[in-house]
Length: 71
Image 1 (cartoon, helix red, strand yellow):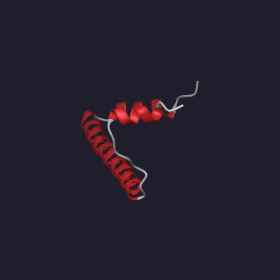
Image 2: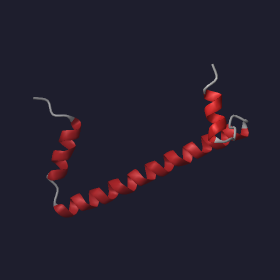
Image 3: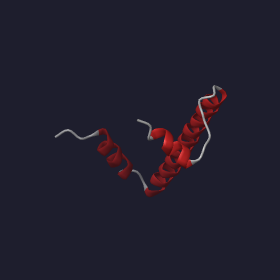
Image 4: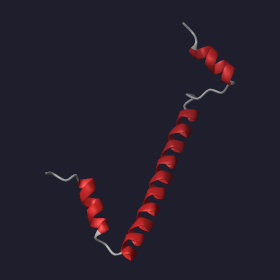
């Protein structure tokens, strides 16, 4: 039976001491937060560029709905 890489990772972590598991968890949480910050920063950069190119328009929800209801 072939074990997935994810399952192998879980088994490897379970073989660590509780202290090492806590350190790993802390490290993974910090890396995940950094990845989320990086993604948000990238999205902000893209929106700013779209704004600078004039690809973003402002309006009310009603105006938006009226535009997408066009035949």
